[in-house]
Amino acid sequence: MAMMALDDEQVLALVERALEEGVSGLSVINACEDGMRKVGERYERQEVYLAGLIMAGEIFRQVMTVSQLSLEVEMTGTGSGKVLLGTVAGDIHNIGKNMVRMALRSFGFTVTDLGVDIPPARFLEEARAFEPDVIGLSGLVSASYQSMRTTIELLHEEAAESGRRLPIVIGGGTIDERVCEFVGADYWTTDAMEGVRICQRITSGV
Ligand code: B12
Image (tube, rainbow, N blue to C red):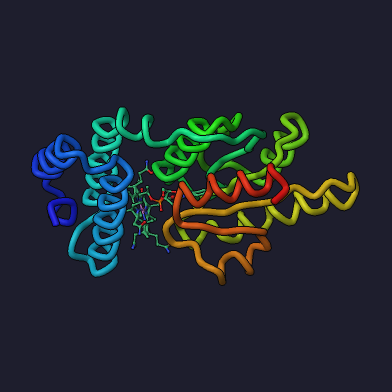
């Protein structure tokens, strides 16, 4: 509710209280993600302007800082392998991608994060140089689905030549089964921890 109202002081006070009372950092983040989605819906209904989205992003960043310690304790586990991560061309959202990066590293994965608005050719170039086990693409605006698709097509063309097809996982709050099919990815998720589990399954060969 406080997130939806973009009341940063109240959000932070509630988060701090919840953490003190022993609520897990992950539950706190999940609740805030839900709040972010609601802010997005308010933006769609034109009840808040772009400034509202910017504000929501800033509040979430602060929540992440406050919850960091608790998250680091909770996000430990085993995993090994290399993940190449980035937000695709045409998209600058990075909060979710950064969470995935943190989660993967906490679980022992080596992650190269290319950043945001990454052109398809750059993914290909870095995939050749870094030789990852998994490629993770993030995207939230529907305008970026086409560049996600082009990126995957390019990676598949390369795979046809090299004979090594890299598993591709896509994520982002607006992703679903249909987007996954459209872009030609192997897996999709809207949850960072599920992303970690997918990478664990891929790299352990289960
Ligand atoms: C904050 C926000 C912004 C901030 C972003 C700040 C930042 N540094 O990232 C700012 C203000 C910059 C912004 C800009 C815009 N935004 Co915006 N934004 C949002 C908002 C409210 C929250 C996104 C967010 O950070 N959520 C919290 C994180 C933690 O969740 P997440 O990203 O989903 O990530 C989780 C999972 O999906 C997963 N995950 C994410 N990536 C990956 C990758 C992999 C590999 C894996 C495994 C998992 C994974 O892990 C995360 C943790 O669980 C969403 C609403 C929504 N429904 O998502 C709109 C939203 C995404 N934005 C939207 C729009 C339209 C825009 C703008 C075009 C607005 C404009 N007119 O300029 C621009 C886009 C510019 C561009 N070219 O990219 C729309 C997109 C609609 C659409 N379908 O196209 C949304 C859905 C709002 C809406 N309902 O209208 N936005």
